[in-house]
Length: 175
Image (cartoon, rainbow, N blue to C red; front, side, top):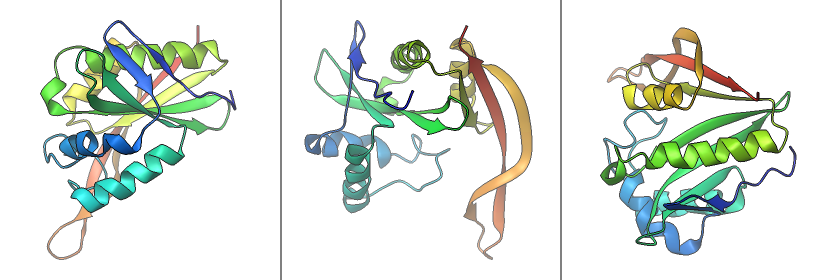
């Protein structure tokens, strides 16, 4: 599991490491308020996206998803290494490509590789209000294992008070 570096392709997608020339495609979706509404960060400007891209290039936990037909980088799948032969799954896709099954296709390929490499468990966390994400997780065969109430906050209100959020916890085991 330590050398798990998912790279591959599906019928419509290329799963690869990030490159410097991904900046404009990355900015397109990370600057969109609707796309990042449930992420722990605000929409990014070009400088923030450039810094974020440098991190993505430096890690093997973040995989760029490229559409074969156009060569555009349309999103990412995150598989973060955790204790006990586990990974944490995350994904963000350009809103222009939602509803086409592309996130499911990319995640399914990544999960297949992860489990084939010896990973025991993959888990994901999402906001209960992010129905698109939890429906995708359920379509991928994840089971909802928990509902944590007001366990995190990423933003504060006008007085600096935390805006608490709930979290759904999902898990999938290698079988």
